[in-house]
Length: 491
Image 1 (cartoon, rainbow, N blue to C red):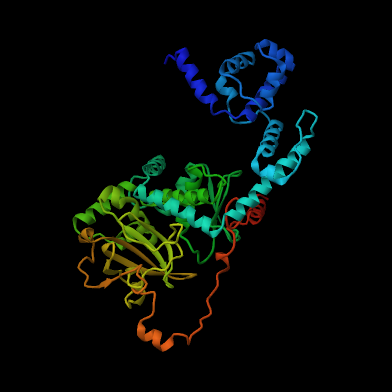
Image 2 (cartoon, rainbow, N blue to C red):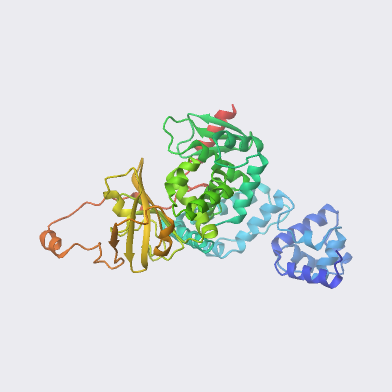
């Protein structure tokens, strides 16, 4: 490929507009000193003045493209390398961090004097200033990561999922490539095959009885080990937990930048693990066959791949719209009527707060996800049509127990898609007028007349609703406990 001079200049010019003058200055100073040149010698070599070059090295002036090209030639490098974003040394990285901190609006509000960084400034001083600034920023970010901020992040992520119909082809491809690498030819992924995936990646799997209580698994990148719990009554399928750890490694997840990044990593990890456990090709084939027979059922998908009902329901939402042409919604609702998780791309109207978040909101008492708690037969799925202001929906739901109570898990579709599902012939039907408060939020006139002003319930206060989000690189995880655990295992 031949690059013309004008094209190269245009590329360099576009890069230059995005340069970081502080980083560029430190890189130039590093290269000049490495070449043993004084400021005046370097300036003379590129037809500039020493004062002008000093301003550039201090990050106070951006050089013209012509001067940038001359400086690159002087130091035997390219303009692209000069514009690299990484610091040339640890010392330079500290200088850049301190310089940027002093130029920030936040620093200006502190009323502190600025220090002039010179070669004689002790590295320890720079470390202290940079460390204090980083910790101050971390604490400010922690304070801003309130439950409201978390709900906003969740709402944004759910919107992304809706726009993509909860289907991520790039994750599907990566999962299939990994399955192909270990010779998985089809069907459900066994525990043995899951262990083969770990072996392929150069990891060993160890089950321990003292896994940190705040974790499902711990990945030791130093010794390439996946640690899982050896509990007699694990809350999660060990195969699923291992696949999630594998997914996080394959996807290159690091410490989350913020709570939004933490949520996104969790969604992608769970998606990737599900794509391994229920491979796209076999799962779509299974679903299409069931659709052609008008016998789609989430419990059949659960049983066919040996997963939980919740995992099967999530996987259905991944593939239903893309491969079956069916829009849908999913809910996980606590027995108290509060939404724990939800997703939709079929226009159903979930209750939401002012941030757009639906988690923590009460579901209409007449929806299938609430009605199912009153059904005596919990062996089979409960099916119901519900007329809502947004249209009529058919839903199928089951109830499952957890250490924190009972939850309903439901999949719903618009009326026109109900014909593809087992249970579409149900005679159960309800009417929801929510968000009209007279639907189910306000007591009837009879109840109000009998008990209005004569009852004073004590609410069960949840302290976490008022607290900031858990601190640390991985919210809710005790890093000290994790590191001490790894040290004990390493020993």
